[in-house]
Image (tube, rainbow, N blue to C red; front, side):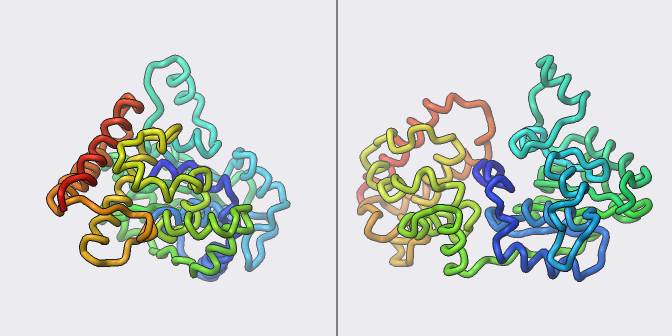
Length: 340
């Protein structure tokens, strides 16, 4: 999952978007104790998952979902619901405002270890124990796993038996934008829902309702590949997005000022993709054709794409962000100025 998608999740109220609401209503009409919400990032997996568990636990649920006003809904809002267990990497939990266990928080505060980037097996064992307890509020219990692909093989195996035969009235929802990374045994135990792509018109209208100017909404939705949640997260860079191709060709690092490593790599991968599309006389996806630059051979662009892919795999490592950014822009400059 991308850093931008994690940072955005829930904080911007995507659960209110019409396409999320429609999917929520459809899911609430179906039965099942274990759901996998899957699809590309930026389509609202976490938001839909949270809306689903909120409706399951709500004291006055409707066909449209949770009421949003009862004690259960308030407990979820303030992250203290006794019948909801949230399984996330600790770094994601911190970003989304979910409290860590006392033991985990103590270990991190004392600097015995860093926050996990995976869902720890200890947390999964706690979740299995949670599933065996009696419901505190009498509306059953729910376990939300996000991003589900962050379970390693040991964590996933710890979940299998409970996922297949849950004790009592407990339901599971797993949310993922990389379901191919999940174990087949996990996939086989879940009912699958594929997140829908919103219509461009609806996405643009929603972005404008969130306060994004109409001209910027067009640019951002294209920059995000049609994913409205990611587009909203990218709104601070709307004014510089169209200048990225020329800046990269000139080796101008300043265009990426205050960007994180993940965001820089993501932008350059999109630029590389579109430059290759332009060379193949295909339609660019993330940039307007008039903003792309001439130059770059097939060999240099292909080499650049492979390098960016390798860097993306290790983007969470504690690199020196400034030096890595300079190296990334220098690499882009070389690729874009090679003879066609």
